[in-house]
Length: 430
Image 1 (tube, rainbow, N blue to C red):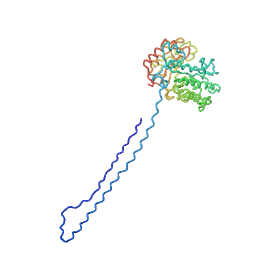
Image 2: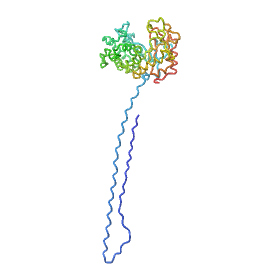
Image 3: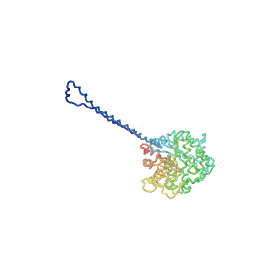
Image 4: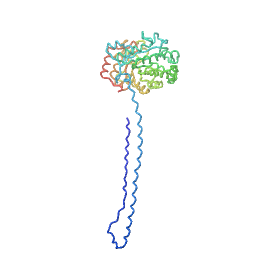
């Protein structure tokens, strides 16, 4: 806050006294009789009084320096925008049911679900997400899920996963006119339904797709991937490229769901952290509200199994299990360093770790379906300040497939460690 400076000017006037003449002293002369008295000598004329010196004109007061414009108020932290306390938030996602959470008295800050497929283009069969909620209008799953999550005291999170609907990881779908017309209609519907709830909501925009885009873009430039964008009236000014796709996803969200907070999920499997961060910056991901860090899509033990299920096959020789002492590879320090590098490219946006596996630690590699070993829950919930110190505002845990652990198969690990964390939470911002 600047203070106006006060300027005081003192004016000093010097009065000048006028000077008067004086008479001579002594005895009177003798005057003879009959002789006319001599005329007295005329008194000398008094000297004219000096005119007083004029007071100096006051100097004009200098114009006060203009006060600098006040700095804009800082944007509220993302936890405040979500209506949550200023601490590291902890959430649960897909396959962890409301009933199971209640049975274990788990009160997540965030609950996540997927919105999958595009109507008329679902190569996997079945209905796309707008038709999922029986007895509701199209998009009713957003309405129903949001209400159920709010009743749990949590923030709803939607993971939009429409791009693979047509041809899996083929990024040319963004230039397919019929597909993109249906795609954009559903994106708009999602945001409209979120906006109608009036609830702060998190949106995770198209996991994996941006990794495929990074691998396909000539010279790593998303502006060289053609797309259908400007046909969307709200996005008429966006370029018809992958950059425009990202921009339109944000524009529609800002337009129809002002309380939504949106994030892009970079794929570190597509390149090193610097290359991926640079690609996402060219895409415009720095204009989102947060970064989605894709932790892993399976428990580590599933990859270690010598005869892995299909969901964990062909992942290479490893190692996969994280070193909690942060000495050997892979480890948690390395993971945070990678995401911090991406974050520097994206303007320091806060990070949400997503689809974080829920297995239980073990010294024995491998395991069995739903009971594969993993140590993300154990480490992350017991080192919260390491995460907040690197810009992480939320950890969301969920199995990435049907064979991974969840809260019904983890022996109460998540319930116990999340309660212990909440008894001594890590502030965010730190």
